[in-house]
Structure formats: C-alpha cells, structure tokens
Amino acid sequence: MLAFLGRRLLIAIPTIILISIFVFTLQKLLPGDPVLVLAGEERDPAVLEYLREQYRLNDPIIVQYFTWIGNALTGDLGISLRTQEPVLALIGQKLPVTIQLAVMALIIAIAIGVPAGVLSAYKKGTWIDWVANVVALSGLSVPNFWLGIMLILLISVKLGWLPASGYRPFADDPLDSIRVMLMPAFVLGTGLAATLMRHTRSAMLSVLKSDYIRTARAKGLAEHVVLIKHALRNALVPIVTVTTLLFGELLAGAVLTEQIFNIPGFGKLVVDAVFNRDYAVVQGIVLCTGIAFIFMNILADAAYRVLNPRMRDE
Image (cartoon, rainbow, N blue to C red; front, side, top):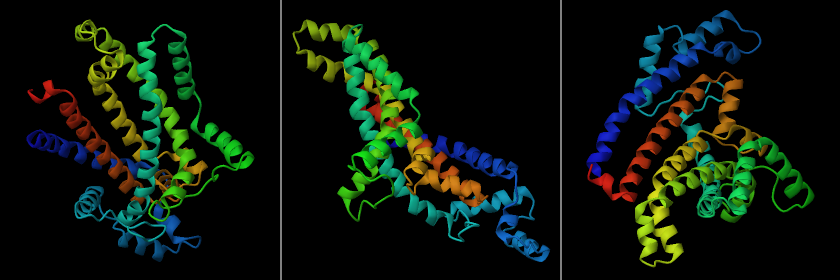
C-alpha cells in the first residue's frame, strides 16, 4: 500500500505543477488592476508605481510565476491586497468552517442516498423504485438557493426551530454549532443524496445480476445478508468514487449556500476576493482546492484496494 501511495504521489506532482500554471496565468487574464483598487480614489501615480514595485507587478510574468510558486513551496501564498493578512492565514481561518459544512452535508447525503439507492435497486420496477427516482430527480432539479430560502422562511421564521444564518465554531459549543450548520448542510446534502442515490442504484443493479449473488441466495443466506455483505460491498467502488469527488467539490466551497446562510467559509472568501480583485487570495484558494481534489482521488484509489482485494494483486 505504501508503494502504491508513493507512486500516486509522484504522478500527482506534474498535475499540481500544471494546476499552478493555469491558476497563475488565468488570473493574469482577468480584467481590472488590483493596484487601482488598493490605491483608493486619488490614485497618485507615485503611489501606483510604489505598489507595483512592492508587489513585483512590473516583473516579467515568468519571473512573477517562479517567485510566486517558490514562495508557495515554503508556505507563503502571498498577502491579501484588501486585508493585508497572509493568504495562508485566511485559508486556515476558513478551512475548518468549510470542512465542518462538507462533513455534515456528506453524512446527510450518505444517510439518505445510499439506502435509497439500495432499496430502489432491490425493488426495481415497483412503486418504491418509482418514488425513489422521482425524489432523486427532484433533488437534482431544485436549486440550492431556492431550497435554502424556503427552509429559512419555514424552519427559522415561521417555526423558530433553527437559526437562520451565522456560524458558531465547533470547539466553542459543539451542539450549538451543529444546530447553526444543520440547515445549510441539509440543503447541500439533499442535492448530493440524489446523485449518490442514482449511482448506488446503478451499481447495485449491475451487481445483483452477478452469478455470486445467485449463488449466495441458493445457499439460503438471508436477503439482508446478500444485499449488505455481498451486493453492496462489491458495488461500493463507484460509490466511493462519487463520494470523494463530491467531498472535493464541497471543500471547494458552496458559494450560493454560504452566501445565503452567511457562513464565513471558502465560498464566501472566494466571492469577496473576486469582487475586490484580491488575486493573491483567489490564487491561493484555487491552488489549495486543486491539490485537495488530487489527494481526494488518491484517497479514493486507496479505498478501492481496501474494498476490493483483487486490486491489491494488480
């Protein structure tokens, strides 16, 4: 396993380099000049020149890239033009918020999507399968921002059960933090549950047609043992793939959901940085997000080898 992970990490290095090149060059193509925003309304030419020299914006683009990537390798992702804080510190502040939201949303998605997919495949062609597919299609079709607004009106304004917005650090008060994050996590989790349900159903339908499932039933095993121990375990490989990719998307930041519920996570940080042309923050977040996606894929590959013994011999 260690040799396998080592090979995957070596393969990931060129991908990370390509990501860094795209992140840096595409940022340069964006309209606007961050120095003009930073200089204020007066925009004294001497001040503009000083800021460009300070942030090395007068250097050739290739020099700027190697300076940026060299600093990034040492953990220095630059300074926010708007707040004058280190980008790495800003990411460190927002990352726990987004991780908590992503984990809660993923738990809700798995708790709803996987059992629904298994039941839909087992009861294929029945009213249960029809209802499950209609619910999944609704989950994919309903926009997150609309569902979030409706939940705020119903749960918070009308019933007063949960807070409408805000954030409470988990370390300060775990129960209150979960209460605050429950609605946005549900909004994200229902959409992910629909995706998981469809993939689980497809994988289970393929597995339930296999010879070893017929053999297990012929041996007289209980139906729940056949479904869980034999069918679901062998159908987990595509489910793990989808789950890890969905978690990577959540770490990238659920922009609309975080804006609606006023959650200070990655999504809100990206929106604020783009509006203020705070390119150092945008670069740092996109680079970290790309690296997170790569490592989530490596984690998924490692999970395959744990779930499917045949892959360990390849």
